[in-house]
Amino acid sequence: MIKVYFIINPISGKGKHNITQEYVASFFNKDTHRVVAHYSTYKKHAIELTQQALREDADIIVACGGDGTIHEVATELVGKEVAFGIVPVGSGNGLASNLSIPKDIEKAIIRVRDGHVIKMDVGTLNGEYFFSNMGFGIDATIIDKYERSGKRKLGAYIKASLNSAQEFKAKRVQVTYNGMTKEVNPLLLFISNSNEMGYNMSLTPKASLTDGLLDYLMVPKINLFKQLTFGVYVLFKMTDKFRKTDYIQTDHIIVEIPDQQTNGLQMDGEYYEFDANKFEIKVLKGALQVIC
Ligand SMILES: Nc1ncnc2c1ncn2[C@@H]1O[C@H](COP(=O)(O)OP(=O)(O)OP(=O)(O)O)[C@@H](O)[C@H]1O
Image 1 (cartoon, rainbow, N blue to C red):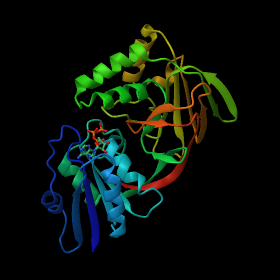
Image 2 (cartoon, protein in one colour; image 1 turned 60 degrees about the horizontal axis):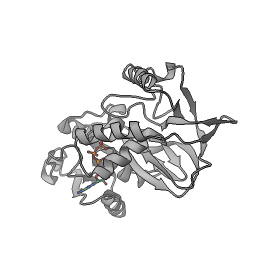
Image 3 (cartoon, rainbow, N blue to C red; image 1 turned 120 degrees about the vertical axis):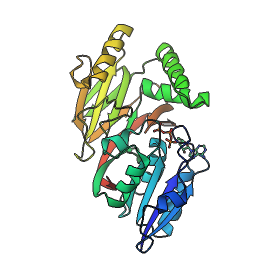
C-alpha cells in the first residue's frame, strides 16, 4: 500500500480552493493507495504535520499551498527518500511553475499520481533550507512590510513596494564568491535556485533546479530612472544583460554585513530576522526528491 499524505493550507492564494480529503482520495485507487489529508491551522503547522506523516511512514507527501507551505513541508524532506508532491494553490507559485507543475488543481493531483521523481537542488543559508530564492535587499523589506500589514491582497503588496522604494536604505555588504571579495551597496542581492519567482517573472533566468549551482544577482543602489529601466529588463527576462548588475552562477557565497549585527532577509517569500551578520550560502545538489 502506497501512503500519500496531503498537507493543505486552507488560506493559500485567495483561500477558496476547498480541497477536501474525499476529493484528493478520489484520484487514487483504494486497493493500492492510502490517502490522508491534513489541514494547517497556523503558521509553521505544516512542519509538524509533515513530521507526523514521516512518523507514519508516508511514501509521498504533498504540499497544497503556495511557496510558504512548500517551504515548510519540503524542509522536513531534504535528504530523505520520501517523494515530495506539489499542488500549487498559492498566489505566486514560482517553484511549481519552474517544475512545470500545472496550476489547475485536478491536473496537479494527477501529476502527483502519475508524474516522475527528479532530484532537485536545495539552497542552504547558515544551515536553513531554501528551495526557490532568498534575498537581502529591497525584496526582503517589501515582504516584511507586506507581512506586517496583516492583509493578503495585491493592494497591500503594492503599498508595501511603494513604501519600501521610498524608505529603503542600502547597507554596506561584503560578498565573497569564486575566491574573490567585493564590497557592494545593493538595492537587490538575490540568490536563486529557481528560474521563476512567481507570476511568470524571473530575476535569474539562467537558474536551473538541477545544475548544482545558485544564481547570484546583485543590483547596486541606483536612481529611480535606472530602477524603472531595470524593471523592463526583468519583464524581458534579461537581468543578466543589465549593465549595472553582477550576475554569476556558483555553489558557495559568503555575505557579510559589517555595520549591522541583526539582519532581515527573505527566504522563499517569507521574512526572517537573524541575529547574525555573516551568512554562508551553499547548495545541496539533488537533495530533494520532487514529483513533476
Ligand atoms: N490556517 C492558517 N492560518 C493562517 N496562516 C496559515 C495557515 N496555514 C498556513 N499558514 C501560513 O500561511 C502562510 C502563507 O502560505 P502560502 O505560502 O502557502 O500561501 P500564499 O502566501 O497564498 O502563496 P505564495 O507564497 O505562493 O504567495 C505560510 O506562512 C503558512 O505557514
